[in-house]
Length: 178
Length: 279
Image 1 (cartoon, each protein chain N blue to C red):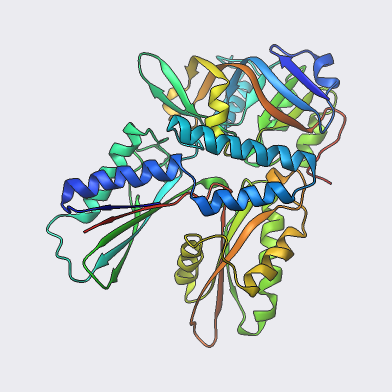
Image 2 (image 1 turned 90 degrees about the vertical axis):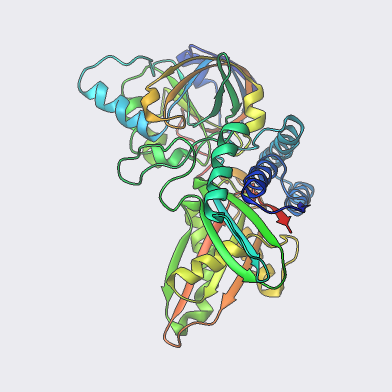
């Protein structure tokens, strides 16, 4: 099946996706990788409010290549290796009603378990940065710029970002196990 | 992917460095594109074909738009050959560093170089021992600059083992095991650079240099290793299929009678490389 999903997500929308489905994402997504995940969890554990929300969100494992002209422009922005986020993701999933992750290379069994009933993992072709940038319409903001360009959280407006493949669904299935 | 220039001073090396980096990032070498196209023709798995198709579309988009094909513009690794008849009256290392700085803002490239402990980003892709410049003295009066930008997804799953001299028969298992553990992480279909022999550091250098070769030309040993790796079924992006690797490239060096260093440098499908010659 082929779907287009829009942010903010709903649980129903997440549950209907099955491994192998093609998905295009439209709406607002944000990038987060190692440093952003570590800081977000630290803040959440201290009870501090985040400048962005994981709930109903599409989190993009990506360190984009951006350039500032008058405003920020995304030049190339494919996914980064999701496995580096394995230690953080289950703790984040505990705190949301539903969520989607776009990344590459797959995630651990713990993530597959934590995603049950609420989250999907969408695989976008690694290295396809020039193509991905074509469906990123605008940079809506940047959070934690002190982490540097790759590690900062970039709030992005996307239109039909894909094709992504549902590689881990909310029903305990993972294409990486097979 | 070779351009020849006829002046050689500090500025021409700076300009040539920007030029090779630009070409490496925006135009994938023909042999690499051919290898991906061949795999696309062979694949039967639908998801695998879709991923290979996206890769090929991305390569075209990068070339057409003149932008880096991948946001991970890597750590710049240079292989420089200096003709022994040349006399360089300028700081070659500084010229290459300056070229990297300029390329970072002009192309642009993502600033990837961070301090290993504080993780502070230098902002311009230079730093302690970055860019990495490997020098070799060769015959003639030319200066040849080759660049291989190396991304982290594939570098992170590369490995080195000091095997026993009696374990020659187990090199194949070591390669297959390494690729299996890497799974979808290094952006398969991958290229496997294999350095056999030398020393601890020498084997790693051989493995990296192997990746510079024409990827369509493999000997019998390399083809045997390629077949073994592709039987794993990891497939493009780890989502299944026949194409886990596009080539296995081996470089060897003599080693100590008591040693068998074996290094495996994994490279993503974007085996970016470009060269320029100055004379």
